[in-house]
Image (cartoon, rainbow, N blue to C red; front, side):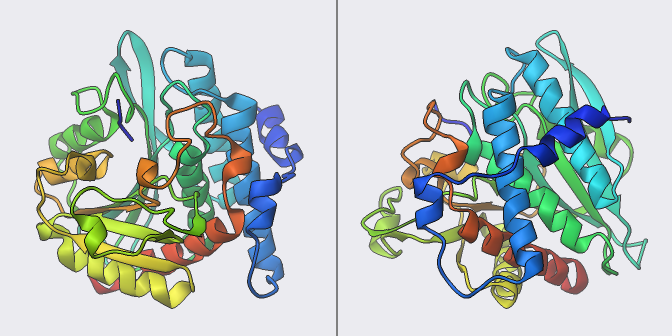
Length: 327
């Protein structure tokens, strides 16, 4: 988010060896009923992915090209364990060969346009745990839950490169390149769900801020995820939120309005779809309106709430299922 093939076995193994040891912030936030074995595995996987991307690999951008490539290979390897083989969409940005990564879960009705669910995997000169390793990890684990589903519409899972500066809102932004190629190839897209920072939660009153004047109408506790859309995307936002609530007890608040004077509502890959008049929503913890570590060296893996992130993934999988089957 803006503000200012074959994978080496050692890299896949490294992900599994990077066992989570949550810090004080993460451990203190684990509440709620006893988890099932499956839920514990999801939570452990989420912490492992975020730690690998933000701590072991670190800053992931063209200025740190080796790390960007490591992140790409790690994501590819993890998706292989899910049972999905990622394809690559390569292009040149700033003199570097960069790649969007994508895989498809075929729908039962192949004549219908597909849904997209995506997250960017690059960073902005920081470890990028919440921004955006949390979303990458969530997308990997949601794919694991959905890979054997019989969805009515096909689902394309996309890991976008170059969402962050200096490529943000330029022709070299990964989501813009993806949509340009889709148009060239005649691919039909029904809409998109974009994950942007989904791992930071703060239960203290007053922890949640908003752009003026939205704070007058919304809760001041940072214990929810927002579903942000424009007016065209309101049916998607509402359907997504309904499905999300069926899969989890984590709070979700849909918000779909045309408010062009609030610039940060367009600060992720969903805006590339809006630009093409395609419905799209962003699932987010609201970024710097809640997370004080945004775009700093403090955005580390041990500041996230993996209990809430696990609940978010369960809601996300249920929401995707609802959207693909009903819309």
